[in-house]
Length: 292
Image (cartoon, rainbow, N blue to C red):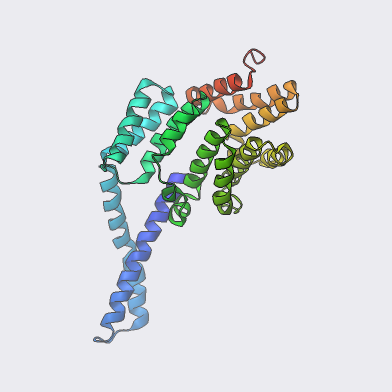
């Protein structure tokens, strides 16, 4: 079951619970005036709430599909995956961000991707101040609150915290890195349903320890990163960059090259996008010539 399906089921479940709550509240009021067979009525409510919830959910979904920003987001994701960081990618990113700033798009969901994928481009190219200026568009509480963490299993919170730590590390901003860890710690240290979230949390810790030059703790985080073995966690290619980087820190270039080559296994999934990340990883680590 993919993440989109799980999200849809959660939304439908919430709609169903709201319909049940409304129905039983009405039943609780009417029972003072009309005699009912309680068990029969309760059974009818439980069954009838399913098609009613489906209709409401379908209407909500139809409204969302008519949202022009929803179509823009879909095209934006397709452009990135199929063609990479193109001029069209940046144009659609601007359009989505402007829709959010102007109030046309009131949801924080779409703008998250319009901002954070753009952030990735700037971080990969060492433009940390620019990356930070885009993250500042986002309101942290929209991505780290309990409601959104429930809906997407913590993915939004992870992406937000990770993006900030990437920037703070690039800027060597120890003070803000420490503040970020302090407020993110309850989320980062919680065991999540998806091991990719826990893996991402360890990557944030790794980058934090590298930022404050605590290499012993960075090594401990890296060992935890390497221990994740599910197929989904193996496809998170950032882990191989961290591994290669630390090998270089220890003066082990052959091991660094071997670690980074693991990315090649997953490039075929998104050849243009992942290929660009792979190229930039090599450049940042100074391994471009060694890996030819």
